[in-house]
Image (tube, rainbow over all chains, first blue to last red; front, side, top):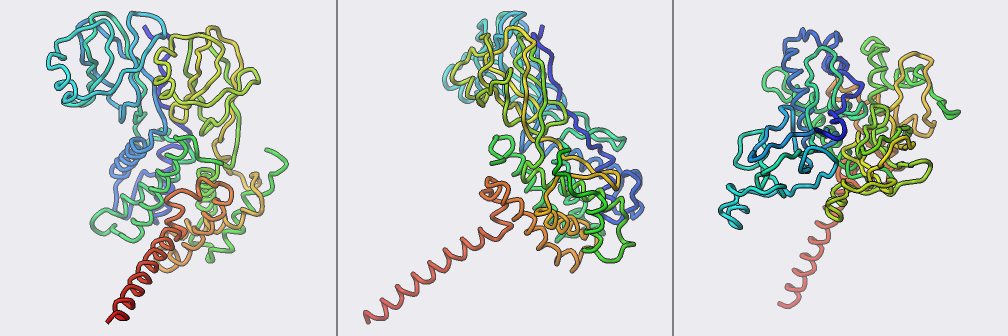
Length: 227
Length: 234
């Protein structure tokens, strides 16, 4: 039982439709909040898909927003499913028992390291795991080591996609100010597309502006952005 | 908004239209959207707009969401007393059992930009947590809406916004307006020394290129000096 509520990834105030309006204006399409793209160079589905790709990339590379969630641990169970919208795992902590906030951070390890130090590690059980691993496992699976032999709970801090854009006015999972850089990132994809839409020079400019946003967001996350 | 509110949406549109030329190619709504995007970019570069958020602590709860009004917490007070900034990583390394401990919080740490953690965890709630930070950029919607930006930054902003509006023109118009982007970054750099030290700032302002060219000149000069010595020995 979690001792405090999970905190989902924040959705902010700018919507996918507002972003698509700006993209339409920048590409000489009539502005109808991204519903139609009469030039035929792009479709709404493509643009929505690029928005989600760019959001994913932005979140993965910056860790700008985090969610905190819980996974209930069971005796003799080492592997647990992670949320479907997870992009990156930032911290895993484990608490033995069924109550309290006594979570302790688990160390990220890998199977090679475990195999070298203790070839029997996979069969070992102890009351409280001390580490976790993600390699040689199916996607979105977390393995805690040693396997717990008692009830427990993992508190996970992760970067998630949040609610995916679909063109219906979904709030984007990126702070309003940084959506200006999503704009450049999506535009880079649109103008980098092969065929009639291809415009390598302007796509390169957009890519550079997008990278500027990544660098700024990283400065922000490390807490040294403004002086 | 403070007494510093000096520039209206109409002021912005008038100045940008003067830069752009033929009116028919850009609607007022379009210009307004790009003004708001420009203001947001300015905020990302400088952290210009500040705000606070007040949160009541809850017993046994280490994490607090900041909501959507603040972009980032920079300073935290508990009942009027400033807390020391730290990081959850540091706490985990220095005191792995910090989440078991209770007491009046002395430190805070960001978890991403939208959550903060307190250490020690408060045993009971009801205390007042005030988070000071960078707020979401105010958005201009009606013609008379004003924004608190000084005139000294206004020209750099309007030129930059005109540059982003030129994007759809492409070609020579867009290329020739890129200098406005450099001027905009330079104006932002005056307000943010960390920005001036960043790689992309140096790259875009040509400072990296200067450094490489200086290195090349030094190498060429050294080679020239060496070759003249060799010739002199013959």
